[in-house]
Image 1: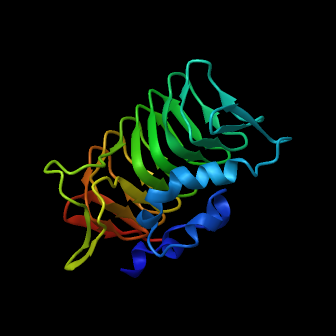
Image 2 (image 1 turned 90 degrees about the vertical axis):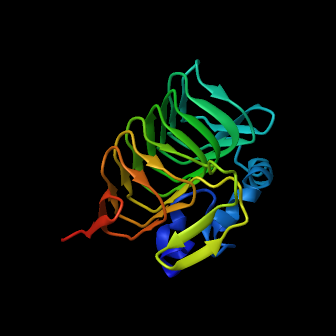
Length: 222
């Protein structure tokens, strides 16, 4: 599944975790090691740019963190990011430069690239969100199947067994997810694709597409 490979989904220059992700073929392969990677990277960060705010928590001095936000490590919040009122970061997360984690949004075991917006009532778990991707208000990643079985990434007749019980969504660069959509476990969305509001999305959605509903995905015209 070439379109699910990291090099097809992401510009790795747009995250502090670029070198880490470059080790893998598929993005979900990186999920298990996020926690340890943050601990290793955090101690190397420039103290003139980042400050340590607790055990395994590094926050850029230029970032804006609301006093009502809850931060748990391991965690890196990069430069000029915004962590808004009542955001809940459960840990094992990298928040990219200029990214927004908003009101009542919950983040857990994620790599959030630069300039990403998850600004209103989002849940993002066991996921990787590419550069300038955006999740509309109320849209979430569902990271565990209802039957608790291991997640399989499906693209038509092709399948990849991930061996993971927890797997949210992999969003390529510039993906737009409409309000109140659910990205089911194992969802992979290619670059520059738009998801209609109120969608229930599963499987692999091609790059440069518009997802209207299950079975109705059209190619963008430029």
